[in-house]
Amino acid sequence: MITAIVQFSLPGSLSREQTKELFAQVAGQFRDIPGLVRKYFLLSEDGTTGGGVYLWESRQAAERFYAAGLLRQIAEQYGSEPSVFYFESPVIVENAVREPMGAG
Image 1 (spheres, one colour):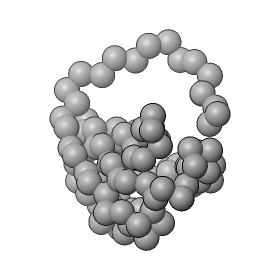
Image 2 (cartoon, helix red, strand yellow; image 1 turned 135 degrees about the vertical axis):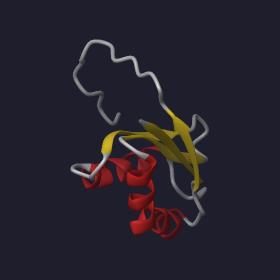
Image 3 (cartoon, helix red, strand yellow; image 1 turned 60 degrees about the vertical axis):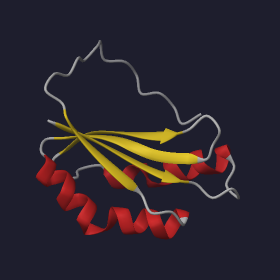
């Protein structure tokens, strides 16, 4: 398994609430992506940085997805070139399954 962390600067014109709404609007686009196990949306406490943590079956699956346009889409939507960091995830701990947490 591979964990990828994507990080980008958010425009100062977006409030935290607006950013959360944008994330919620695009969340469905991440369903049924080949090789994607899980995705978490990220928003820094000060609201200046956004991103995602992705758990992938392989780095190749991650790179295919990012090359297909996600990074370009982020740059166009938020006006910031995203950075991607890859980590091997040799051990994963799953706690009890809980109801999904809301966007709020």
